[in-house]
Length: 130
Image 1 (cartoon, rainbow, N blue to C red):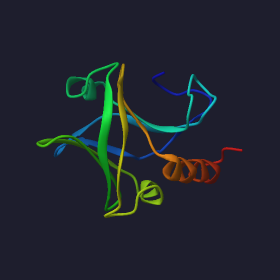
Image 2 (tube, rainbow, N blue to C red; image 1 turned 90 degrees about the vertical axis):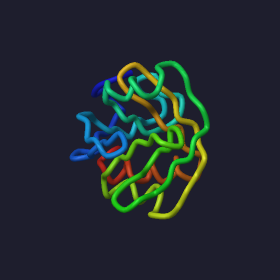
Image 3 (cartoon, rainbow, N blue to C red; image 1 turned 30 degrees about the vertical axis):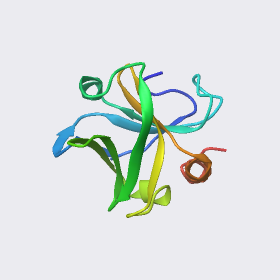
């Protein structure tokens, strides 16, 4: 599901880049059990992402913590960066994981591993989720 919904907590002020080009979009912590989510995950919603990552597909990719955010390596020469300071509570700069990245209509989602899901859920509580 794309767009705001109950159970999707926006990371206000998040910035999204394809390589070095900034694109418009929204980033949400999408909580398990709400708006069709089977697990808590991170939604990165920007229609331009569908031009570089297919809707309906997915694969295990490297996701790295970088200064003020995360970096998703789609291919050797193609990556997505999401900048928001709170994301470093999920993956610290230099920390890396290999996890599921799926394409959806209007963007992508990151289905982190259990350790990062717990950190996302803790972050959600700080954002006002009860």
